[in-house]
Length: 358
Ligand code: NAP
Ligand code: ZN
Ligand code: ZN
Image 1 (cartoon, rainbow, N blue to C red):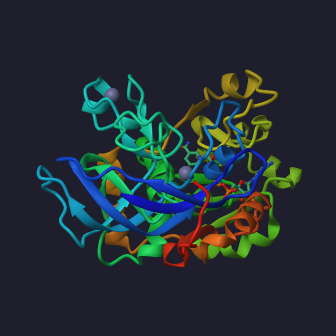
Image 2: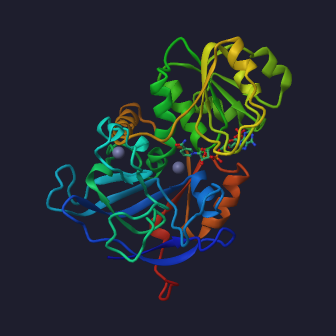
């Protein structure tokens, strides 16, 4: 099926119009007309080849996809034409290892297929690498398609598919709830969802930010307190007071000042930084038996649970909707921290120029 989108052709070129193809639905597939796609900081890391690996170009980013089902294969049972659906970071996995059996496809032992930038193991198109949601159509196996509650605004629901599940999953795993003091570090796309979820789960939530001007917003999102991480005195008085920290900082950083905020047996979960964490010394771990852990997105069952939780609690993301052609400016603004709190591309603006580069 002919499709159309925007692609990066190299690490330092802007995203530009791109003609692509999607496979016709196989028996287990759902074909989706994309309505909205969120702009995750990971899209930028990949488009600009910042993961230290080799981004395959052309690269069509986008893994916060909301759309309507346009066709289904003969074996599809959960979806029908017209349903509002979502696709997140994964479009396939081995489906037979222990993690896949447990519904933790993001930890698949044999390698998952990311929505963009992975080897396309199904094929059926000229593309050897999967291409993401900055496009008008996508075809995805039913297991990797999610139901979107009708009550949620479709544009504002898009970032739930990555920013939502990435923050919901560790909060659930570490059993965040009433009576706990929880810090969310970094008020960006992930962080603003972390605050909303931790608040909805009943915790006492502290927004830990480098940006004092974001403080008022953080309270509106559900934070009970704001801690400015550049204020050494404030950090010192908050030492050893947190049960749990969710760290969304997108770059390598000195973790000691944050670790020192944890109480005895507290845990800090890193979801942002894939770069080296500098100056990690043993002392903050040892003296209060603290832990540091990591967490990757979420599996399909938990992602559906998170979407249903959002339906029940009327939780969506705070977004700025953009036209597709504004994507390069949106990337720069995201890197500068100048977005409240997620850009979402309205795919109705995609247009279809008469001639686009293949
Ligand atoms: P984002 O919207 O750019 O937000 C990141 C926030 O971190 C910024 O708004 C800023 O908040 C803070 N920050 C930025 N640079 C900082 C620095 N040098 N020191 C301290 N704080 C800093 O990014 P995002 O989309 O939320 O993504 C965050 C990270 O998570 C990215 O690296 C992304 O690739 C990653 N990610 C991971 C997963 C996963 O499964 N683990 C999934 C999705 C994304 P303040 O202004 O409040 O300080
Ligand atoms: Zn993402
Ligand atoms: Zn597997």
